[in-house]
Image 1 (spheres, rainbow, N blue to C red):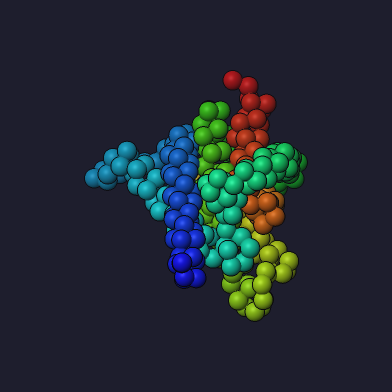
Image 2: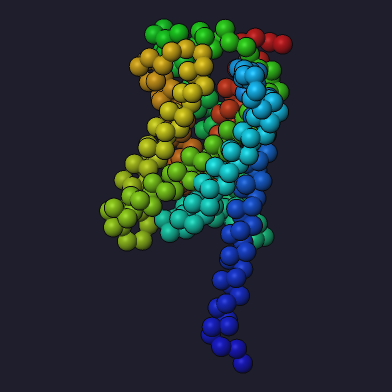
Length: 273
């Protein structure tokens, strides 16, 4: 006859193994994304390596390693704190555990993810062309800058969908929700106010995170900063809502679709190759 303690031990061990497996899958996906972004980044602005500095290949490897480490930390935070506030990666955990319903829910969410992602990309293009292009040189500078090939934009979309979602949603947004729950002393699941506050803050930081790339093209004036926050922040709100309501995999799919519009479809339509 088994004791209650022995009956409970296997599920705990299995849960830890599943958490580690989920983390490893996320980090592996992030490594793929960190490698995929390199051709796009080099096409936009090839870095100048000063004399005596490590060769470009070493710098690229260091960039990939740094990104993967940061994403690994963010994934660990999300998987550790997420279950306490109703977030994390239960969709991916279920998939890896062999739960067929988890896969069905994800595939059922794909049409919504694709529609919202594509709509977000279209809104960004329209706002940039008809609102910000009239008041900032950022859009014009982007057109004058070296244009990556479509295949490079496709690879960059992989990075956006995977790495940025792990960093901004699974990592940062989860941490903000957990902090908000602690500050408001919420019992059980955090309220909508906490969720939306965390989503907005993560979206703002998502927009600010795109400023270094913009700064390589134009001076960072106030309107340029507003442009980065608005264009990227609006999409970030959509991805954050999907993460909250449908899971991290759906948010990744939506972000990937948005980047396809921005980095693949738009270049094809604007300057056919």
